[in-house]
Image 1 (cartoon, rainbow, N blue to C red):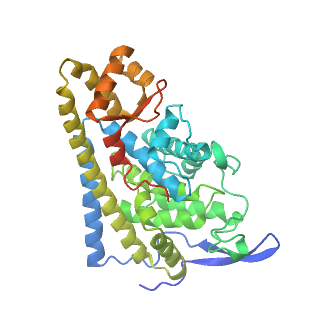
Image 2 (cartoon, rainbow, N blue to C red):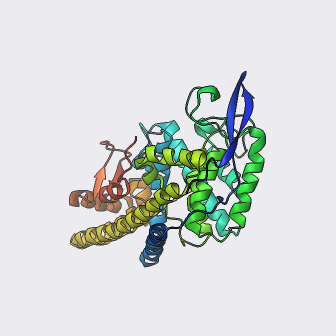
Image 3 (spheres, one colour):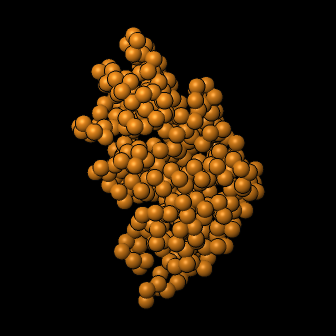
Length: 386
């Protein structure tokens, strides 16, 4: 369907030059997105995949374990899109407060993302609405430390930003002028509160484009825009746990992602964007279900191997259970969390290393750190820095 441009340009002066800043029309799209039979089938497939993801969480012995891991995986992937070089192991080492050689600025940004996501989830659980105030709170957490701390954390921007290029005059895209941001975000908030008969996935697809187009913050817009998807789907009841994260899909299809965002703005091609988005939901949800099954199989296989250790099996299984919750830890943490005496914990860990379940990372005699390799490998798939 041909709509033409879905907003208007406003000429504004920035740094001594006049530029055309884009102001999007309020949602929903007009005319409405055309739901062809093929697009409807894709939507239904994506919804079924989300249902399977929701169901697998209820079958897991500890759903919070999966959530802990997936939140951190998402933090790494979403931050990598913005150029950080941290890995999941870097983040877990940082959380241990013992991170020799970890790129500090990068890993702080990833850790901030974890805090921002958890803050949003907790606020929704308290009954707080998904609104601009919550997005500003999430943004404040995201930029609370590190390189973004001077970029007005928790506040909508009061100056012009741009995407691509060295200045607004040669930018690939110039979002709305600062005086338009409040009105644009108020309109987006109304859309989030009063859905015009659309399902959660279609609303999430539209809201993400709108947020990215408004670009309401000086920094961190991409990360907050991706968080908005997870928070909206959780808030709308599509997912009991917020476990659907599209950062890997966006990372793997970056050129197409940016092309389609631009196509919505220039030609109103919401249909192509929605197809891309729904395909991402389908692939991501299906992949998460597969990862959950593989994790369960890994835990069961490794537990059976550990049980063959004989008398040492009991303490080794306690160490193993702790590492299922946190797949990278030092000896002090393992002894403290399991309540096992340090020498006994050390023997159990040595047994797990001998089985190939654990790997020591530091090569030191003191302050050793151990990784549950199989678990980390599963979680880190697709997580290599760009």
